[in-house]
Each structure stands twice: as C-alpha cells, then as structure tokens.
Image (cartoon, rainbow, N blue to C red; front, side):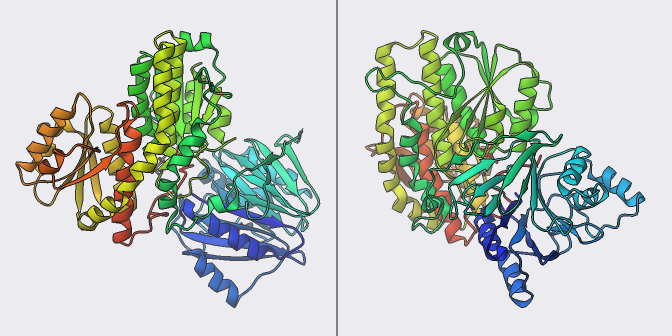
Length: 609
Ligand code: AGP
C-alpha cells in the first residue's frame, strides 16, 4: 500500500522523511518521492524504484526546507514511473500533494478539469487532487483542500503543501489511515505508527472526514464543513525496538518467535484470576444480546479469513450458534441475508482492509451487530464496529501475517467459550478446564518453536519445488490453507490447501515425486483417516511431510519427514500446528532468496478494493 510521511519543524525535513519512508517500505511500493517548501518555493524530487534510487538522486540534486511531505507509491492507477510517482503538482507548481487511497471518480473529475484548461502530467488518480485544489484556491489553502475533497468519491489520506501557504501542511483522511505525531515544536505525519515511534510516542489519529492544518507551533483539526474537532492525544506503548527486527534476520521470523508473548498479551487482563471468568472491555455486547444472537457471520480476507474458518468450528462447538464464513469482497456485494439477531464478526490485523471495511458497512446497513477482532487500536474497522476485541499482538511488520493469526485464534477461542458460557452451554468446571488449557498455551508455543531446525532442514529440499499440496481434516483444513498461503506469498511456490478427504475427488491426480504433500496429522478422531490419506499419497510415489504430535513415533515410518508439536486440546491444536508451517515457508523463502518481509506484488494492508 502507499505510505505517507511528512515533517514540519525547525530542522531539515528531507532526512526525517527518507527515514520515515524506509519504515513504511514494508507496505509494498514501486516508487517514492518528496516535496519540500524552502524560502516559499516548492521543490519536488521523485523516482520510480526503491527509496535508494531516490536517495541517490537527492545526493546529486538535493532539496531543502523545514517543511516537507514524502510518499511511497503502490500503483493502483497508472504504471510505476517517475511521472506517476508522488508528489503531484498543480498547473502552477505551487501546490504539491501526496495521497494514499483511490479516487474512484477521478476520470470524471479529470475530464471536467481538462475542460477548464488544466494540464495533466501523469495518468494517476492522485494528480486530479492537485488540480482540484488549485481550481478551488481563493486565498485559503485549508478551505481549498476542504472544498476540493467535497467533489471526491473514494478513499484518501492526503498531505498538501503550497507556496500559497509556505508555513503549513494540510492533511485530511477518509478511509486510509493518517497519524500525526507531536514533537517539540515539530510535527510528524505518517500512514502508520512504527514510522514515527523513533521521534515521539504522542499521537492523534485523524478520523474519516477530518482535515487538519499544521504549522510549526500548532495543529488544528476540523470537519470538512469547517467545524472544529477536539482530538485526544494517544500515548503509544510500543517501544521503537519492538517495531524493529530485534536481532532477527527478518520481521517475519521475529514475529513468528514473538507468538508466545503475543498470545500472553492477548490473554492478559481478560481472564479473572480465581473465577476464570472471561471479559472483554470493548466487546460492547450485553449477556442478553449474546443470548439473542441466532447466527454468526464471519467476514475477512486472506489469513484473517483462515482464522474465521477456525472461528466457525469454535463457535459451533462451544456456543452451538450456526456460523458462516464469508470473503469480505463477496459479502459486501451479495445483499447478504442478515438481521438484528445476526452477529457479524470482522477479523482484520490492520483494521484498514478496504473489502473488510466495506463488509462492515454493509452489515451495519442491514442492522446487524458488528464486532471486529483487530490488531490496530483505533483503526478504521475497529472504529466502525459496535464492539471490538483487540488481539494486542503489537505491530506486525512482515507482510506475511503470523502472530496476528495465532492471536486471532486465541481471541476466537476465548470469545466462543464466553458465548457458550453466557448461553448456559458450558459449565464452570468445563470453562475452567478450557481456560487452563489456554493458560498453558504460550509455553507450548515456545516448545513448538523448537521445531525450527527441523523446518529449516526440510526447507532445504522443498525450496526447489514448483508446487506443493497441504492437506488437513477438521480444524486442520484451515491450517492447511494457511500453510499454503504462507508458502505462496513469501516463496512464490504455487501451493494449495485442501481438505484431505477430498484428495480422491481429483487432487490425487497431481501426486508424483515432484509434488511434496504437507499433511496435518493431528491427534484426534480424524487421525486414522489422515493416515489413510498419507497412504494414498505414498502409494503413488508422493513425498509426505507430516506435522504430528510429540510422542507419535509410528508416523515416522509412514512419511518422508515429520515435524512434531506439543500436545494440546483439539480446539487449540491449530495454534500450534501453524507454527511449523510458518517456519517452513520462511526458510524456503530465504533459501530461494525471496524478499521475505516485502514479497513482490503484496502489501501489508490492502486499503484498495
Ligand atoms: C496474510 O499473510 C496476507 N498478508 C493477507 O492475506 C492478509 O491476511 C489480508 O490482506 C487481510 O489483511 P487484514 O488482516 O489486515 O485485514
């Protein structure tokens, strides 16, 4: 996704902006640029390619100024190129803008502006904003930006500087996140928190429909209609190091290893010590409302959608509530049959995924209660929901989601038990047993991480594969899907997750010695059936890598490689089973020389449809 970083203060802006843009690289991008205001003049430097290319260009042609805005672009409209990079300028070159989001009606606006004589130098939607502001400028930059945005349909996080107002930055947001950090007579603007943590832990988050004017001494926030808005500062507890790699080669490996502590943080403060009573402060659902729920619909994308599949099993198992899982992009456009007794649960790490946000809006429009399971406090989806449960996993920088996934599963487990309890289906004794299983879980995750050397060794031979199949039954099936997605997105090997029982209905035709098959051979009532699937693969010359429980010696005779995880309850086994698959994908990607934290074509948060 695009990233925005800006600075206004007493020091040179460019070094801050370059540092900030580098912290936003993980979002995925294909070009970068900076605009500064120096002696009331605008200077723009922008290049296709990585930030290092922009830095090299700036060494040859430096730009100065204590006010500046920068941008990393993830192309949505217009090929990656120098001219399509941001910042974009108006006809006069006196206004420069950077933008994250999509202007859905940009073609119509471009046509209207062209008819008025505006000349365009790019094929982007964003450049329309610069000319729209120029067209609405009548002496007040803030008003010009607010007026211009009234014509816009779509999503934006926007920063504007202008020679007409050489002492200020105007920022605005609708749909795409924008944060302002408070320094000492200086302000930082950013698309996300980790990029400014080095300078300040005091922030405000702009809400949809808000616009702000920043000078070196103050920030004022308004609605687009001009009404003043009082914003409460937030203190960010993340320390800068936690957003750094902490000694690991990649954020992804660091975040895999953070899972024990992340799950502890997810559980913390949510289970009363003696009674083991579960409570979520922000759930905002009364016991009566919980009892009235007659159907649950999960909606999410990607890895979060896999978590939702596990959620379906857990809610039907513990709370006996009919539950479905919908891809957010499908749900939002299919006129779903939901009503006030339907609980829609959105699952999202970033809280900014456009399709999931759209699904939340659709659910609310149909009078459903909406809660979200989210990792970013105050994110758009969290704020749009009636209630929210934060996973508290800390910043997840690697594009491939790992600790967000296992903390989502932890929240789903707690929520399902809470619902079962409130609906009188789980006794206190059972609840205490389930909670004790959960309290032991972080230690078992630590134990599961000891499979890292085995995963690294197996990665050696799998790294040359061109395809792979992941099989599971029951809750092992969503984990097979998740393991396949991890492999695809970081190593670019085509992989498919499949219900193991479905093998005989087609996929078994794929089996030969070139098709490694990863099988979730977890203890439980389906174990014998899984052994049968393993036999089917082996009988056709296939290679089988099994994820099995510690102590299961007999599996070693049946498969080519086995990775062992600690035993836990069947309901919590997915959280342990995914760990070797995360490590396998990571080491295969490293061995293939892939860009593990920023895989090609991917973004950490997909804030466009
Ligand atoms: C997961 O590894 C991917 N990065 C991607 O599928 C991600 O889960 C999806 O885009 C949803 O993101 P969200 O959880 O932030 O909504």
